[in-house]
Length: 161
Image 1 (cartoon, rainbow, N blue to C red):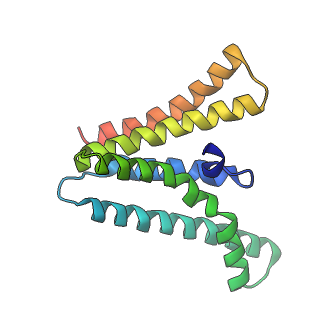
Image 2 (cartoon, one colour):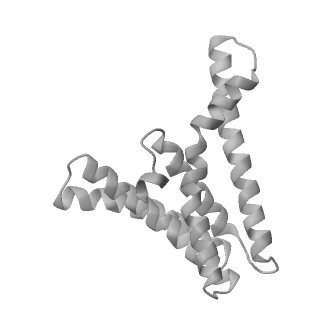
């Protein structure tokens, strides 16, 4: 499962997707929205971020190489950056599962925020295991992920206190 979320090619995109959707969820108020409106807003924000990332990469390369915009170039960037969407998938799935299990929208959003934070820790652990780390070194690496996850959770606390 983690290999689907964190692909071999462009794992950076999956990390971005997880962090971005976690941050968007952290700012979600769930006061008057419905689940459908929340998922729609998440999909729109995610699509905008995915497109913006691919466009910025493409524009930067074109500025360096002095080449014109092409649909094929932008499409290649979108395909390369599809990992951003994949990374956002697990927190969104957590939102949907919590809601299907009967949680209120506010609780489901909170579950998705925590899922984003937990996924970042899992990514750090996976990176550490792949690097051959053990014991204290592996735990320190997991703490780096926990720190990033706590930033997402802190954003939620700040936005809703």
